[in-house]
Structure formats: C-alpha cells, structure tokens
Image (cartoon, rainbow, N blue to C red; front, side, top):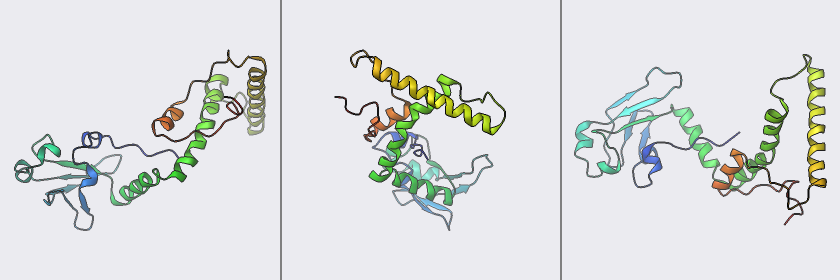
Length: 192
C-alpha cells in the first residue's frame, strides 16, 4: 500500500496558518471547536460519491476573530473532512508513514517499480497475447527471462563509464524528497 495523500489545502501548505488538525472534532455532538474556542454552527453531510462532512463557523465569530488572517481569507471558516471511521483511519495511516519501519518497508517497493514499468511499457505486458491462464503465465515467464538476459548483457558488455543510469521512477523521486533511503539493488552492488 502506498502513502496517503498529503493535505492539499492552503492552510496545510503554509505552515503559519491553522490547518484542519488545529480544530477539535466532537463526533458525538457533531460540532467542531476552532483554536480560539468558538464552536461550529453548521454540520452537514452533502450527497456525494465520496462521503464527507462539511462544517461551517458563524460569520460573527470569524469576522471579529483576532487570528482570522491565520485561519481563513473568507468571511467565515469552512472545513471538509471524512466521516469519523475514515478520518481516524487516515490519521493513523499518516502517523504510521512517519515511522522508520514503514519507510524502510515502503522503500523496498522502489526497487521493483522500474521493473514493473519496463514490463508494462517496454514489453507490452498490459495485455496478454494469449487467452488461457496457463499460456499467459508462460508469456510472463518468457518475458521475464528475456528482460533478465537483456540486463545481464548490458551489465557485462557495456563499459561502466558508458552506461547511462536508468531514469528514476516517480516513486524513487518521492523517496528521495522524503529522505527515505533506497534499498541497494543489483544494479548498484559493488559499484562506486
């Protein structure tokens, strides 16, 4: 499983304003309290494909608030968040993403990502050439053998200085931005 999506609200991107985590949610009373202690006025669950809760605060409370520029640019603050069960799961997943164990486990995926991409885009593995499961399995095995032969041939015949490193995948770039170490792959073993 990949990482949860980052928060993309303006408040989350700018570190100096109140984001969703700054608010206290009371699920039983269906009310949210802002960092200044003002309770929300409206709680609704609009019809949508993806379920969510919309909370609005009173214009009077937000209009007179001394920290309003750090909270919202409109006349009142509005929050959207997932229902309780999904909200708690998402929070737990985001917390788990910060652990070194999760990062190490997820880094393993970077080593296989480029291989999967090569199979799909370089060898047409998105669609099988045959109809039965047995024949499709044979196609996969033979394609894997061919890819390994290509890689070994490149490794043995091309001088080290002339070999172009493979371009990093989007996942490898993500791992680099998050300072997650890449696992040592066979391509980098014993090289300086």
